[in-house]
Image 1 (cartoon, rainbow, N blue to C red):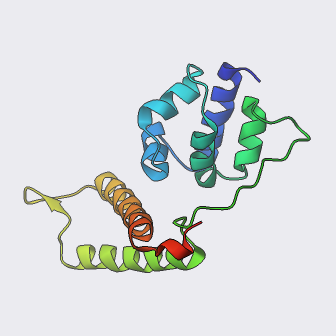
Image 2: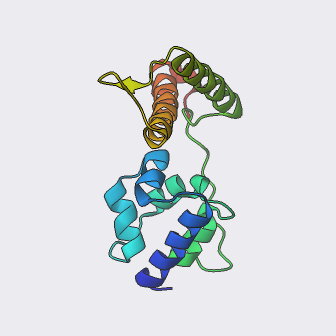
Length: 155
């Protein structure tokens, strides 16, 4: 599949996954908006690293399938499984982040703290703020694992 076809395919995957805009997927995945835009417009050959970062946020597709679609893997070729980095978030980390996220949002909602210059935030801004907050919690957890994991447990 050529870059233009892959861009159309990727845009459909994004929309089917519930992301109304490229920016929304970019915020959620940590990939820049301009990269997502160039992928969808067929002007940018996506890197395997970007595919791996985007795949978890797209429904019904994994990074291997994306890599096959863009031409990095043949149909019969499985992706090389490398051992995950020591700082990759575990299921327990994800659960803890979810609890922290829910608690923080509940605190913000109950205290009417979601306002800007005294004006309450609209629903779209609240949703984008929640996405940003969740990404910040994930990044903070990953960075703390990188910083505070003893050397003997690093792979």
